[in-house]
Amino acid sequence: MSRARTALRVAPPLETSGPFAADVIAGLTAKPKRLPPKYFYDAAGSALFERITHLDEYYPTRSELALLTEHASAIAAQFPPGCALVEFGSGSSRKARSLLGATASVQAYVPVDICGEFLLQDAAQLPRDFPHLAIYPVATDFTQLAELPAEIASLPRAGFFPGSTIGNFEPHEAARFLRHAGSLLGAGAVFAVGVDLAKAPDILYRAYNDAEGVTAKFNLNLLARINRELGADFDPAAFEHHAFYNAQRSRIEMHLASTRRQKVRICGATIEFRAGETIHTENSYKYTIESFRALAHGSGWSPVAVWSDGLFSVHALRRSDAEQTADE
Ligand code: TRP
Image (cartoon, rainbow, N blue to C red; front, top):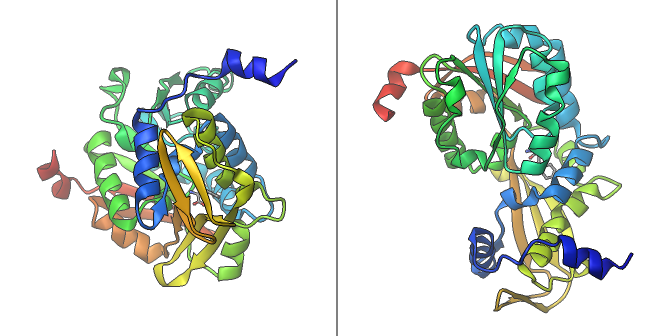
């Protein structure tokens, strides 16, 4: 079968003036150049990310799953009885499964993910394993979620934010998100948050520079996506994955570095690259247990418990209602 014919039939129309185009142009005309990480997660990117989570070098998923499995009952015991569990950035829901399997006190599950295809595929499989659970998937960027499904209006809420996705925000954005989650989840809510810990730079380095090059593919898929959806002419072979630990700022930085001087056409604009110039695609901040607790505390949440294996941490937070009411 000819590729061109397949592409003609299945390719979505080029989107040259929507929010994706606007964000890409704004990011690539900024100095230094950058792109918003949420655009990593199209179907191809979500599948590559799923592969990252299985890599030997990428310890966070393994550590977190082990913590969630080992301490599932203790974690779920913090949730309000009969609650709805709202997961921000649920991906494949693998982690929620370990919590859901350990408790009867969650009545409803609300997976929220920007990748609709991934979300629906997975939500369709949950009823088989959890026949009594009501499931209300929401396909949206979880930072933009303004209200919860009406069906869970009368239930108390628990939030779940695993994967150290909180580390992909700038600290001030992380604080804003925690506050937003607090008003969304409501009085008395509990929030379980997975947070990667600061540690030896070589371990961190390897986690974002795997030998098989899957993380590099994941990073480079962003350029391929811009080509596919915006009709740009990036040559992904002329860019390299650069990830390194910035100890001073306690974060992994991911960049795409141009291997040569080049020009790229996107939606009528021409973007010029110097040899070695980078597009900053993501940060992954690493916290200590104390530094994360301080951040949570300053954002309307009281730390109530933490589980850690020394590499990764899972925090249980309870909404500090006295501090938060002014906000709502
Ligand atoms: N939030 C996780 C982290 O920062 C997962 C993640 C997001 C990630 N983007 C990534 C992992 C890119 C590897 C590469 O670790």
